[in-house]
Length: 481
Ligand SMILES: Nc1ncnc2c1ncn2[C@@H]1O[C@H](COP(=O)(O)OP(=O)(O)O)[C@@H](O)[C@H]1O
Ligand SMILES: O=C(CO)[C@@H](O)[C@H](O)COP(=O)(O)O
Image 1 (cartoon, rainbow, N blue to C red):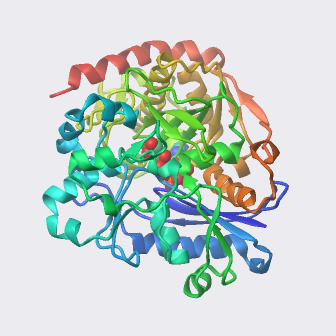
Image 2: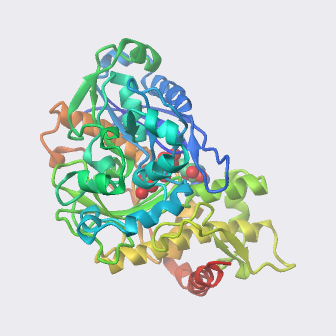
Image 3: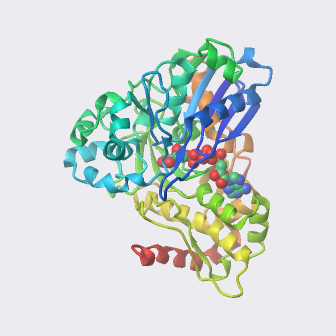
């Protein structure tokens, strides 16, 4: 049995997978995101640790001795400043955190060749800008730190007592030379950051240590269990759903939403509105349009309007497409693709006396779907064709939501079994562990979940066009207000 652990933004997921791909157990434990100041998004690594223990124990349930390896996946871009032994010195600063907006000019001033090597747009919430912010605003802490770790690399350090990173996460820090496939010492020096904060790089799919006794007790797993280096959650999600062929496109809806497509070659987006990152296999990449505000915005809506998911979907379904003219901009934490604007903010516009809560809720769901559509447009302009999309992520479940997504995007959505789609990253982490142990000789031998249905945009698609036109107009009109 292979165990995959995914440190997501809203929860830790653990998945026990048989060699043939069947799911033998699953565990889930929520973890919180705090926003102590406007624009900030932090989590407590101690809470991640507790959630990892709870999720693992739930997934394994008495079958610990059958587990042969543990693979890791994690939310991307963030930073845990840690001491020599990995002890966190500060809350984790997450990808959704926009405090580093003010330091992005340092990136824009980099010499052209260095900016080209990064192959990605400067964006708040990435490890590089966050470290610049820490250097400026928390100099004592910055000076005291021994390591700047990505979330899953921090978790692995606690599991095995060794510090490492790997290309899929490192390439998404804005401190990585994608063409040369290594940390960009040149960018780090030019920015005046401390090079020694960056951990050594290993391959994603190698065993990089053994579970320490205390960690083994905490997770309910055997001491000495091989731990595999792992990958970024988006890169692992590709593995988990079998998205390996160039030309295939996947939409993952979680706290954020990502539209991704594998690439064999190093082909950055010349407009720099979308990302190009390293996949978990050597020499492989993927293109990505990244929407910051998917589940993140819907959770916010649920909280301020005080509704459960069931009520949200039921009341939204009772309102026709177009939400009676109400438009929602979901940018509660700035936005990446296509606006690259950490200062973007959310809005409900077009309210009238006839509007009820259902209109607000439907507009919120449509707003997230339209934000995904606009991001998809940017990816298509970067040369990726997406006549259909494979659907994954914990925020992609439910009939009416999927119909709305297909209608608003105007394309068919391929539906995978829930056991693969909703925990794609944890599944990918488990399969990566299998690759490291030689259970599969290469990506072509991985068990691939077969789509079990298609949600067509159907007759509803045309009913979204006018609403999408209004949605697209709104952000440029409100910008800077
Ligand atoms: N019924 C639902 N409809 C839409 N979104 C949902 C629903 N249930 C959960 N979500 C969203 O899905 C996200 C959880 O998906 P998941 O893939 O586990 O995210 P993460 O890996 O970011 O923690 C949450 O942010 C939540 O807002
Ligand atoms: O920000 C990105 C990709 O750029 C995400 O991949 C994050 O890693 C968050 O993932 P979820 O927690 O939404 O799954």
